[in-house]
Amino acid sequence: MRRMLGMLAGIAALAATTADARELRIAPGAPPAHPSHSHLYSKLAELLPEVSGGNLTAQVLGPEVVGLGQMKDGLQSQLVEIGNLLPLYFPADLPNMSLAGELALSGREPHAMAAAMTEYMVTCDTCQEELKKFGVTYLGSGSSDVYALLTNKPVRTAEDVKGLRLRSGGAPFSRWAENFGAVPANIGVGDTFESMSQGVIDGSMASIGDLLSFRLVELVKNITFVPLGTYHATSDFTVANTTWESLSAEERKQLATAANEANVIFTQRWGYEMAAEAKAAAEKADIEFVEPDPAFVEAVEAFAEADKETAAKVSQERFGFADAAERVARFSDLVEKWTGIVKETNSDPQEIAKRLDEEVWSKVDFETYGM
Image 1: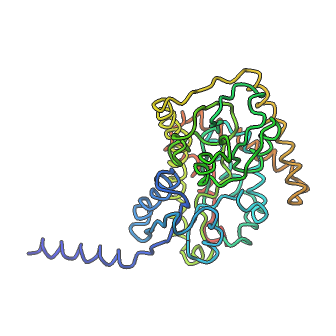
Image 2 (image 1 turned 60 degrees about the horizontal axis):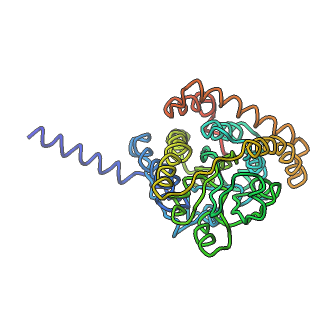
Image 3 (image 1 turned 180 degrees about the vertical axis):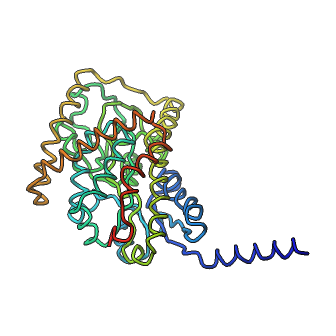
């Protein structure tokens, strides 16, 4: 009888905890096949109850409710409480994050780029001010694999790029395309399949994972692995300030802890695992892997290095950053720092998450952060 009463008491306590739990509306802005849905937001929904002892839970809203292009409105209207915000969609509103995004072509190591972006944003006073003005709190970034050319025509040399219409994910990729004589098309990633199938574009400068996430495996005929950089200018977990302010300092810390772990899992998936799976899918689909000419690779690397200066100039002209060059140097230093740390950890996601917590999040005062 005592055992039964104990069990009933336990069930009642669990029910009370569940009833009192704060359920947060969270939105990846991408379909289930994309790692930002499957390994970022679904992972946060899994981790939150564990980290918070059941006090925080989450409901994932699909892209049919809020897509990436509507994320700003979704957060500001409180339809979404935590959303996947891509700053390059809103450069005028988030110039500091856009500056880091302007350095996309320099990305070579996904975990290092994601960690550098995270530390840069958390420790930058003007970044925090702009986020507060925007009405959100930042909880870390992730990164894609190193972008490649996914095309319907073989690209081996710089000459082969000329005249191609290529989907661009932002200004630095557009600069790259124009430099090599291609025509950049500013098309949302979700529209790539339709645009390519209709002949509007000849391909995309993108993660090879898009073969799976957006069904491009059905259309792409050639893949050229020239290092086009990473998509790391992300605000993976962007919390509406009304929501952030309603949480206790302990709950904010719990949310940040879950977000930090999910961010690294996401980058591991998007930057490494999915890239390998997509490559295998491409081989099965008889997509040709084109070996780039060494002179082409050299030209691409040289342009990426020179583009750092362009990124600083663009940021100074567009956003009024008198110290744009110093900001670019700061971000580059952080990339170098985290490239070393990733190497030290042998690219172990758990160790990287631990180091991020030690280097960044353990130093945050959650009574004041984002306030």
